[in-house]
Image 1: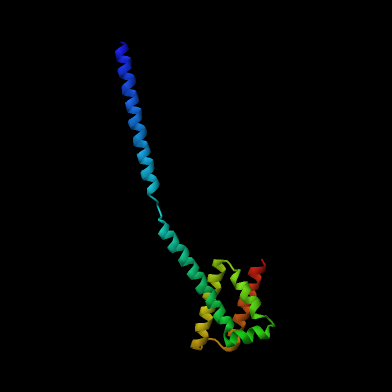
Image 2: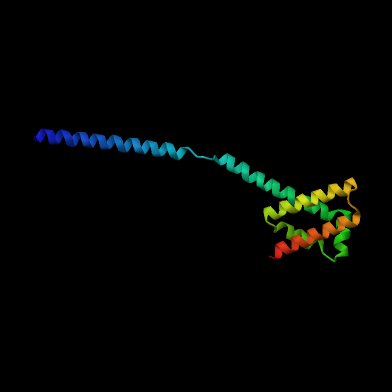
Amino acid sequence: MNVCVRLFASMLGVALCLGSAASLSCAQAQEKQHVVTLEELNKQAAQLAENRKANEGAIRHLLSSDEGQKALKSANVDYQRVDKAIAQLSDEDLAKLADRSGQAESDFAAGFISPKTLAYIILATVVIVVIVVLV
């Protein structure tokens, strides 16, 4: 009976060693597999930064145009102040304003809107930028 207990204890020890080794190798394999790679995360972050830069550029392009400068002067608004406020907008607000400014510019270029209407749109954009930044 003593031999049976020793044999059982030895078999139990070997089984525990094999089980712990197997679980360790599975844990290491899971650590190496990521759902999203670091390269994909970097690409996504770079894409977001590029989108933000393009959106800021679209708004600044509209405000720095001749019509934009005239509209800013008529409202006694400093371009530099609005320019700083643009950088403080959230990505969502920036995307909305960039879309609107791009649409207004293309409509003006196509002759769908008058210079006076474009000036109103520019002033509305400035007001939105200032309000969003202040809130």
